[in-house]
Image (tube, rainbow, N blue to C red; front, top):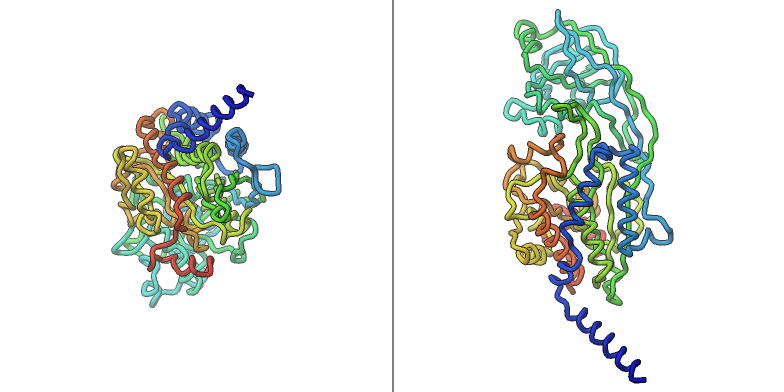
Length: 491
C-alpha cells in the first residue's frame, strides 16, 4: 500500500514537472544539433543524387522521412496506414537535340521552353522585344520571329520569363510559327536556365492545360553576339531550327504526410500545417567534375526544420492539431502542394495556418527571414520565438524576387489559408546566396550547424506558440489573400 502511494506521488511529481516546463524548455529538450546534421547529411548526400522528382532517390528520401515521422509517433494520413500521398504527374522530357542555324554559324545554347519537337527551315523576322507595337508594319505570318528577352527597360531573366505567355499570345495572334528569344548572359546563369528548361518538366495530371500545338518558343544565348550582328543589317533572315527527342509520359511521386491530434477539445478541430519541399533539381551540368545538385540549403534544411517540429509536437502535443506535409515537385513548379490543395487529407477550411519552410541560402546568421512576416496576425508569436534563441526576425528583404509566390506556401495562400515561409537569414539575394542556390556547391559540409541549431529551435518554438494561441491566426486586413481567407472560412 505504501509502495503504491509512493509510486503515485512520484508519478504525480513527474507529471507536474512536465506540465510546468516552459515551451523553450520543451523545444530545447527535443531539438538536437547532431540529429539535424545527421538528417541533412543523409538527405543532401551524393547517394540521393539531388532528389529529383520522380526518381528512385526521391522515393528513398520520402520513405526516410515517413519513417522518421513514424519513429516520432506522428500518425499516418487519416483513415490509412500510410504516410505517402501519391502524386500523379505528366512528364515531358528534355530535348536530345536543340540547334539553331543562322547564316554560316550554328548555336547549340538553345533551350526549348515550349517542349515541342520542331524541324523548321525558313524565314525569321526580327520584332525587337516582341511586344504589341513591335508587330506593326511587319509580316510574320508563317514565319518565326526573333525577339530580345524582356523589354527595353528590363531584361532581367526572371522578369523576362514572366512575359513568355504575353509574347506567345502576340506572336500567335500575328500568325508566327514560333519565337526565338535572344539573351546575352554569362555561362553561370545560362547553366541554370539550360538545366531548368532543357531538363524534364512536369505538371499535375488532373490540371487543365491548353491543347497541344506546334508553336515553338526557344531561348538562345547569344553571348558572342553572332545573331545580333546578323540582325544589324537585316530584319529578316533564313534560319534552321531543330528540336528533337522530346517525349511525354505519366509518372508518380509522393508527398509525405503525418498528423498529430491537438489537446484542446475545441481547438483540435483547427489544424496548423508545417510544410517544406524535400525534392531538389537532381543531376545536371558538371562543374569541376561535380554534377550532383545536393540541395542542402534548398531544401534539406527546410525539410529537417519540419521534422524537428514533428518530433517536438509528437512529444508535447499542442492545443491545435498538427499536419506535417513534405512536398515533392516544388522545383518542377510547386506541383506537390498544387496536388495537395486539390486532394487534401483534411478539409481546407479546417487548416487555419500553413507555416512553410523553404530556403535559397543565407548571408546573415543573426537573422531568420520570414517571407510574409507582416502579412498574418501570427507575426508577434514568430518574432518573440526567434528572439528567444538570439536571432532577429525580418520580413522579405528582396520583394523584387517575388519569393512569397515562388514556394509551396502560395498554393495554400491562393485558397485563403495564411501561409508565410520561414527562411534562413538573408538581407539581399546577393552573391553569397547565388553561390549556392541551385548549384553543385550546396553541400551539407558547407552549412553552419551552430546557426542552424538556433534557427531550428526558433521555428519549433514559433510552431508551438501559433498552435497554442487562443486566437486563430489570419491574414492582416488588406492583404492580397485576405478576401480569399474570408471566403474559405466564411468570415
